[in-house]
Length: 431
Image 1 (cartoon, rainbow, N blue to C red):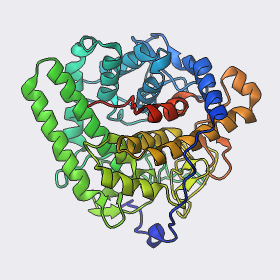
Image 2: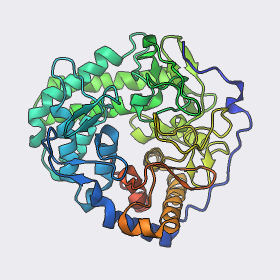
Image 3: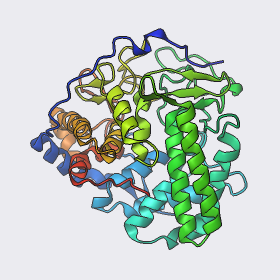
Image 4: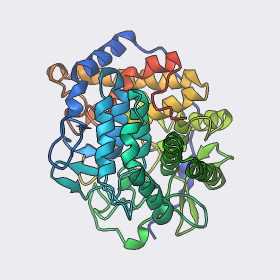
């Protein structure tokens, strides 16, 4: 079994840190906002080949349509006109859903699906809802209601653990946190750097119940119920809402560690808790007060704002105390989720803390993201002019950009994050 070891270090040497004042540097913020306004539309694509609707790409190194990338970027860029591309991205995924099995890959191209991501993350229905609200047009998604229900059926029948009621990833790579230390073997592509070795066995599939998939599934169910209600399917909506409530209970029963005030992961095959310190300790706060109470949000927030998790540049993807911690610069077969700062998860946690009334720590995270992205622009003035200055993640110790030059994607979330927090706005709100 490839479950991570129950490492005794996981809470050793964890200290509270003093937050910065929460003051976002206005010059840095203006620099980042200007860059996004000038370059953000490089992520917009018109229909092409098998992609019959407008769509979004991360830009630079990545020119494909990816699941959570497009949902997050489309939401981030609503103020510069992304709504049709967010709606189209979700329609492209929905159109590709196999109606009887609910199968759809997580990366689509004009030439067809890429096999890299086993199944699209459960973010498609919520992305469609955000687009429907932004455009004031639910009807555009009515033809796709059967595909939405097929997706929910897929997760309920293939991915759900019967004993706990928790949802599981097919593999770590599918989650988007490619090689996060919650798994010893991220996928069939091997262990990854430093020496890529074969490790996958088929019994590893659907055993990782981490906090992120519970959050995405909860939000998918809320979004699906909203669509069903809107289309007059009241009984079906009630059933989906009930399954969301059941998931809420399962999350807190099996993944909440009250002694430490964090969310953990669970291996459904070994029936054992996975005690690794990653951004997932606090990720469920993103779902807001209907899933995580303000008291739990504060505790979980404190955990990722502790000395091993928080760097000058944001929340690390993995604890600096983890033996596998690295800021290695690589992108194949996995992007590095074993240490670097990722803007997407930082921004989502910040939105969640703000929704719990924890404005100061939310702004603290925003300030760090603004600073590291502005540093990226200053360090590469030529790239800043043409839209290639940012990278997909950042060295947690130096703030230097790592991998994928020209990456815009969800980094664009950071530019508008401080102002959204100040205004009490959350573009991901779906309730």
